[in-house]
Length: 339
Length: 267
Image 1 (tube, each protein chain N blue to C red):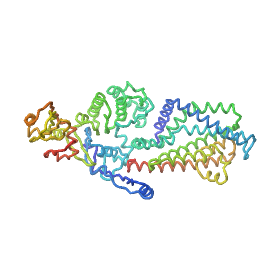
Image 2: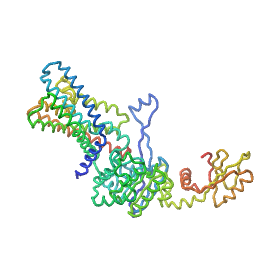
Image 3: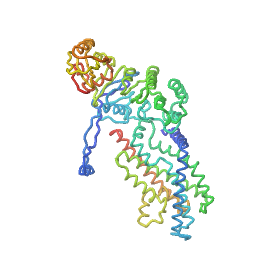
Image 4: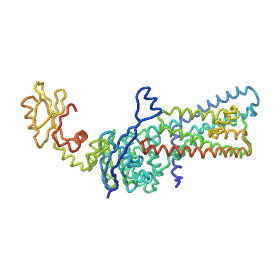
């Protein structure tokens, strides 16, 4: 059953043109010209209850704009959104009770007060019953170790502690849906791991639907079975993470460090896509040629000092989808220099 | 609909928050005393030994200034204009839109908390001592005290509505210096906080009397020293009530426009 329905969602912003120079400034005082920026174009998807979806895209792709429309603080320019049966922007406060939101870049806790005070405030804001509040606090304290810092003012918390407090805060009122906007940004490896474990657990134990935006590929790989990729406001891919990995997993990268040489490196069924100070990055399809096949070709003309074969990382896959589109990727690999 | 407990919690938390910044209390109090000394000396010099000017005794004038400084301490302990502007710029206020509460009311109640803290820890102790040791004209009638407190409270609400609305104008402006200038000019001159309206030249006095700012300082101060007396107290409070309604509607309009803009334009 779909808990989030997004259909042909659009968002356009009118942006004032800034004219340069003195005359331009004078002109814009009297009459300003605008151009339209399409932040989200015709995006549709549905999310079922209990799903965990990665909403992935480069900076400025329209991720946050979509999330803001789902939370109700932005009104779509076209299309429809429904979150748990409610149209968010029409009924913002009712929608607020159904969602929890965490922004990795900013805190929703009261900066100057001990962490516990913010929790108590949220209890009143969302009218959480005393017993439920206590239950939740106990659970979160246990998993997230909140008791280490519950009496410390938020401004003195480390980023890891702050994020733990923030995610606990977003869940106090038992929302069926959780939006996480870059929840692991800036965290160290241990803190990231802890955060992921927690997200996985609440998704499983409480059947909370999670929508996650992130730039951290580890997050996507570990947390999301499904991912929705958007770029330039448009949906590029929506489907299983595993499919993406399979489909593009055949591409391997070989990095070789060559001795001084004069001849150019020419290869069959493989191509050099980056070169830097005697180091070459070579891309090949595992089905066309094996790594040893590529190496043999190189050794015929050059001496190899060092080499490594890189496993396909989701990161490079995604960056290729960004650059070339989902369908174009399987085509013969276009040569890009220096990228 | 009105969730009393929630807003009460805002006041409570904000009270606690003020307690964190004890240094802030002392520095505010310090500057309050400096301004008090300054305006006290200016008015002493202006009276130049005379017992009375413009039908108001020196003692009453000094009382006016002391009470005015007390009220400016009270009004200054709320969320200041620049902080509202800052919250608009950083997007903090826009994000509060996704919470199930009313934003202007939430800030009002938070202000109640911080003002109350500042009042009991700093203002009241200081001004009670001043009332004891200075030769001021205090009202004898408890009803006057009551009328003053009520008028001062309404004045606080008028100031809140104006300051909040002016702060929220940041949503529509890139450059907010002009708004600030107008606000602080009106707050210091047109409100009668340092010069009572009866000393204004005729045209300025009537100009000020058509504006809401007189309700913040002038009316409560003048009630306190007896310049506004008898049935005039009721009409003055009536004027204040009129302005609190108008400024509240103004605040609501600005807020609705602002939140509309946030949800359409992304702030």
